[in-house]
Image (tube, protein in one colour):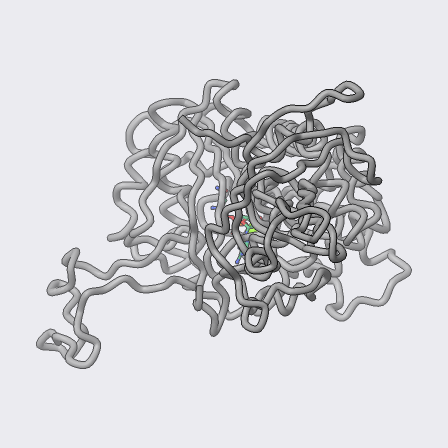
Length: 472
Ligand code: 4AD
Ligand code: MG
């Protein structure tokens, strides 16, 4: 049985005047200050953003039972301690309770000459270089607890609506998004590749007997699930070898993809809107301490933006309407706007932040800028895709109604030169018992940018993967 109490629980204890309690706490030293009679140690165990104040009386002539100088030398920022003592109402500002130490054990020291997290307020850039230690800062504690809460809220949302969590593969032979930005998975000896008679690489000799990649999306397999279970969702790591060194792209990121039989694009939009409102409401309801910290330290509008999303119904417009708004805009864009272009983040942010001043869902994109699987509209030019755009972030969700007609889908696959030997199993959903269906993908780290107010996606995932970086 655990013999210690977590700091979050202790900070919630309300003591009567004069009431005390014997407790044991364990955690890492954030700071130590004091004088020759007493030391004040801020101890944090990661259960909440606040630290617990430990008051340790020092050995002096008047106080021979105080803690020795030898012990105190070992207690530096970063050290790990077990403290036994008495929890009392605090006289000091900023905390309800504090602990008067009776016994301190140093589990692990942290040499002040080499432990990199000495002061408060290290820059986020510096912390990225020590990503293995940054969870020990207040900022990353908040971000990582929020990340957990959002994952929990996501599962809860789908579970309560009868969705089945489907585990789709990470190793795959097909390129869902057709962008060709995949990491290859192979056990072939790269120094000595087997060749076919024609001189090509002989993937028949590779581990799976064919060329395989890390998945860019679980959607295609998700559709197989929806065509049997009606409503499924995936949630897992996805990989994109796009060489984009931006604050919104990672090479390894987490995506959540619900897929629903019998949903049309409007139902898909309703679900996406409900979902994002549910997640932000969960953060406001359960994570206020962490949000307040991030709001004070990084983004004074964070909490009000989260509240705003609750109150607003998202604007729903077509791509063509969006282009009209942008063309009429009194704004200078780096990329000129023309019907047919892929909207850039400057355009998306103009629509959301300047024009509509709320989240926007854009539908019916030109078919040439979207993936092969989207349902084709009767105009022959557009497809039933939808992107959800958020303030500060731009695209947070991408999705669509799917093309359920076998012939139309096959024609599109041919037009887009997608090798159909990789697609027979996917086409079987349209061959056997096809149905209208829809789905979308939420970029989990994009959501976290919104919920934490962080501005660089590398700061909302514990171990970011991006070009030239896979250290930790
Ligand atoms: O728009 P995307 O490419 O859509 C799909 O992959 C579909 N298969 C989803 C579906 O319909 N089931 O990606 C979905 C979301 C984007 O809106 C964005 O939030 C995020 O994934 N995303 C990235 N996040 C971080 N780093 C990257 N490189 C990302 N690429 C996409
Ligand atoms: Mg997209």
